[in-house]
Image: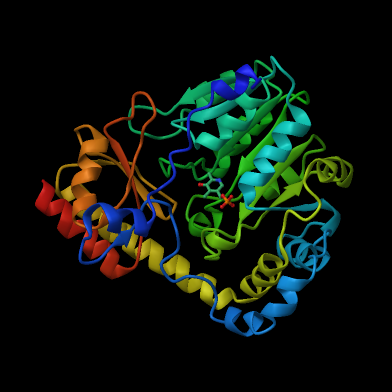
Length: 361
Ligand SMILES: *Cc1c(COP(=O)(O)O)cnc(C)c1O
């Protein structure tokens, strides 16, 4: 009874939970570095919000998420009528695919890819056009431009890019976006933008804001804001009309009440966000130096994670780390099965990872 498109999907390669690793190896301690979670967690001001817990649990949430959308609009200098909330930004990937993609449509994405960028499109019967990274793991800008010139229905990629961590400079981003025709919906997934902002990275928002063609920028509270467990993300949409149409596709209460309240509190605490980002950058440099000093090839990263070549079957390698209580993610896509993605954790988690790796090498 199930549609052929469903049988084409692979199971999602989600990171192992702490309980699963405990059951398997019972290590003395665990560093969970497989899912890009935030070691400092959310703003401490959330504890106050949780006092109101019972009432938040009892009532249906505001289906429009008005207060949070206003706060997001103010922060990003867009109208609240351009903001859509999701049960995590992965929910919005699904909403966008269901709203836009018809069987046989093409979507262009980067490769190796965030699997959900492909899965919802596959489910809708679309064809995936993958643009592989250069041999030094940077984004192949020319190939990306060539691919969008074919006028796909959708261009969907993350910047910084997961799993590699590479990014497009403002200059390259403009070049790519300029090549997009008005038949293509641009979707830029900026799940890691908070970690990347500054240096030679800019969000696509100022560039896209000047275009009168359709675009969507996705953001999440799961990473730098530390709310992965609550499932809340958002999209900023080029115009209110498109947002309104997407709004009809989502389930009405997709952003739950606790998540909305927590996201509001998290947005208000800039100081905590700065602390999270500063720690991730310092620690990323430390772990990167360590990997490089061991002769391992590491992709330059603007995210809270590093992608490196362990030069052996990644699944076997990762099993060795698991025995030492370290959870990382073996990349299972074709051509990258000797690559591993490690999240940047707390200093002691990172020490734990480096010690385990040292032993394994
Ligand atoms: C982590 C991540 C997300 C966020 O997903 P949520 O559903 O918001 O938790 C989105 N896109 C990419 C590329 C990610 O790595």
